[in-house]
Length: 209
Image (cartoon, rainbow, N blue to C red; front, side):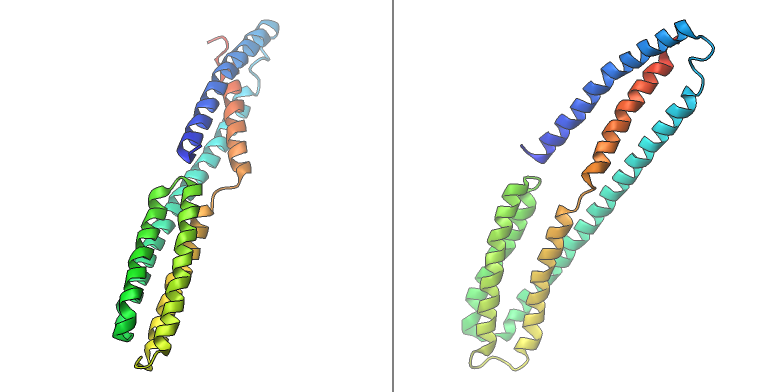
């Protein structure tokens, strides 16, 4: 099941769960009003306000965190693009015979990284493509090591090319971790629970209106 469909079903389930709780709360309120018209509403407004405020606070922090993670992820994409571009440009330092194979692997690697983004939010497919990209990283690194040690390679090639390749590889790990970071499950459980309690309290407050 895709992430989008899973989220949509959970949202629908929450909405459907809140509707009967509104009615249950209203009936409890009607029953309490019939038994104690004066004390049935005592303190309910304070409790309802506190629960709704806590729910709003959790929602605000969750949405704010999601926005921050999105900005971080977008910035990491730019950083990775720059890292790949820098490493690709520095291939010119290698002997001419070693460049075509490395450039071809770079193109394949770039295609693989683009596919990772396109396959999201299908996490399983994205991880599979990520694994293929990691294999290309290893191949590019081995080819680069052999090229900088080859006869005719400039002395500065290892100092210039290898750090750029290392940065290109490291940013992949950073982006992968950023992709996997989400709020703890307990936060979503609390939001669902508070939403259901809020529906019950709202229904209670609607009694007699």
